[in-house]
Image (tube, rainbow, N blue to C red; front, side, top):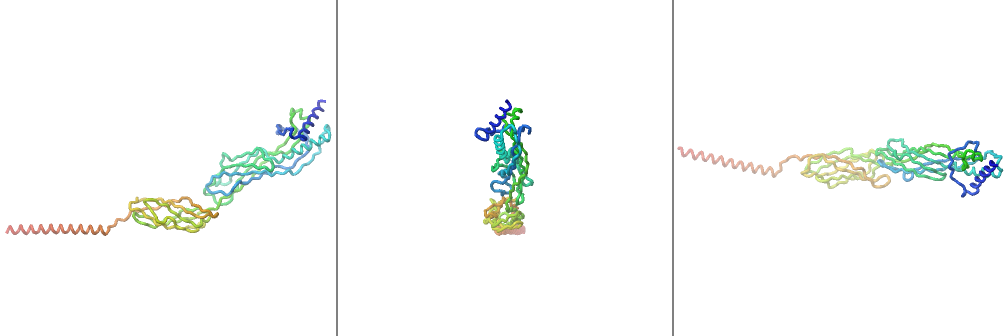
Amino acid sequence: MIRKIAILALILSILSVTAFPALGNDDDETNYLIPEHGYTVDYYRGYGEPVIRASITGNPELSRGETADLQIKIANGGVVEGFKRLNVNQNRIPDSAEEALAGAEMEEEKDCTTARDIEATLISETEYIEVEPTASLQSVEELETGSTANLRYTIKIDSDIPAGSYELLLPVNYQYQANVRTATADVINLGLTDTRYAREYKTKIETLRVAISIENEPKLEVTRVSGNLVQGESKAIEVTYKNTREGVARDALARIIVMSPLSTEKPIVRLGDIAPGEERTARFEILADQEALVKNYGINSEIKYVDEGGESSFSENMKVNIPLEAAEKKFSITGVAIILIFLIALYQIVNVHRKRNKNNENASGDENE
């Protein structure tokens, strides 16, 4: 009698879940406790599992030297492919009740495409891209089929990275429901009075790939400086710039920024297009004050250009080192004239002095006679 009551209670409990879902308990607190197969039956085998895909949210094109907040969206595209009815017959249960139990189990099997306890780690295979280690592991509690979740990682792009496409690896570890078995009345003997199903889970590890790209852009450097400055004079200085990267610098304008004691009337020189590997030379006229200190002067220089996207851009600041020399010591015409006048006056004074001495000597001789 007690056994029959227990069986009847189990049937009513299951029917209450299938016929009146709002009254049923959807929380399977014993999901991970799997009774032995002797305490469960398997009416259906579901076929399907999660299918996780990953993609970059936003613009995947990044710049050199950038620290980027990379957002990756993962989506579950898993599909239930079908069910297989297994030949199970509990002799102690009427056929109609057993069919209700089987139908309820089939509904539970549909959860096979849900991914649980997802852990995703972003990995870079190139030395030019560094993933911030403190945030390299992201987790998602649950991802049902048709749903998405956002992962955030911080990456640092090296300033010398070549342009092109790069793949980042995203190993993903998660669990999914592999099978559901219906508990029989005998499960009460285990003390699991609230258990309706035993669920089997599998762990899946797969590596996803996300692509980013580094934009083509020029990099301009000073390769040669010729000429020198002189105190009090205007001198021509030639600065040669080279494009050391892949992008073309179109309509380039070179500019120098000089401050006292240096000055220039034309700080901007047009260079035109500078293709990768090409050089262009700008000629600047720079005036140094007469009192300028004799030393090497570091002049700031930059290039404005139009990038491949049609936007105006500026190069990094470049130092142009120019030596300043002392002016040569020269006699001016006025100085020479003054010296000549001084010498003539000195000659006249000496000549007058000689004549006076001679006259004195002559006068002294006459008195002796």
